[in-house]
Length: 120
Image (cartoon, rainbow, N blue to C red; front, side, top):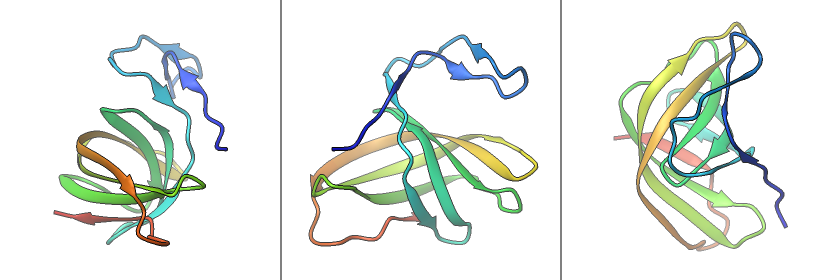
């Protein structure tokens, strides 16, 4: 069984504290690695019904919209959605990317599916 933590506020990368929350859906702290075409390896920080935050290498950039498909470990399920990049937080070692998620579909995985995202 996967463990996750619900977050009540958004981390403030400038002060190390928490800033006020503007989201309507609770977020789960989940770390999943997947490949983004043209970007490389990304890792999620947190996920909610309406969005997610992930990290990518600092020498890469993301903008626009893309489709993602992730297998959800130990569940036998696969998540598919269309994502729009809302914000990129530039960092020294990695960039943080805030995404909105649209048309989320959860379905049974048809075998081992790769964790991939491809640009629309």
